[in-house]
Length: 199
Ligand code: HEM
Image 1 (cartoon, helix red, strand yellow):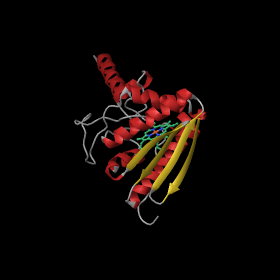
Image 2 (image 1 turned 180 degrees about the vertical axis):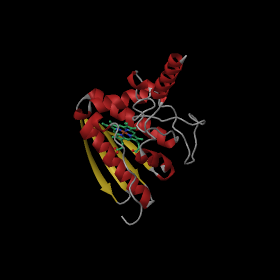
Image 3 (image 1 turned 90 degrees about the horizontal axis):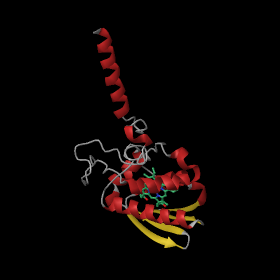
Image 4 (image 1 turned 120 degrees about the horizontal axis):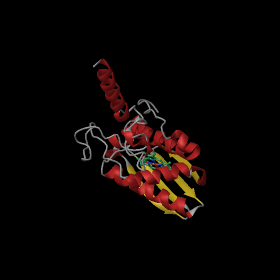
């Protein structure tokens, strides 16, 4: 009987471990699947009852990140050394040009940026465990993001009339630059939200 209890306790502990998220979600059950980013560091952290619904409230939850979005993100992480990027920080936001000489990488880059713009417009956050990404989506209503193709990639202009949101845009641009320079090594890195106050 004691042996049976011990087995039961071990089984419960094992299930809890498999289903638990740390804040990066690395330990969730999907981690080795093709959508292994679906609920972890790269994507959504859908945990609430209103998962998958749109909401403008601070309590909004991530929509489950489509496999396609995650595949593109992983491709970009993998191919980060094929990507070049320069950012011009302005008083009201950024202008960034991100390009690749490789046509496939370039196409995925364009796809990613437009998918993310759509997510911003529709308030469908992902990577909500990361405070900076949570903040970007929380303030999506105050962010204007325009996307243009360049011959080798994309140029984006991202602005806000709210100085505290401009700080978030700047910080996010640094985060994206970190993804480009570091690749997957930065995938699970959390980014703080910049303090508000004087710039
Ligand atoms: C965990 C992985 C990633 C997530 C969750 C993510 C998410 C986002 C989001 C939400 C945006 C739109 C919001 C905004 O621009 O303020 C964005 C834009 C962008 N992302 Fe990603 N991204 C990821 C990885 C990457 C990678 C690996 C690259 C390239 C190597 C990349 C390149 C870009 C670019 C170029 C933009 C346009 C904005 C800019 O140039 O600053 N992203 N991403």
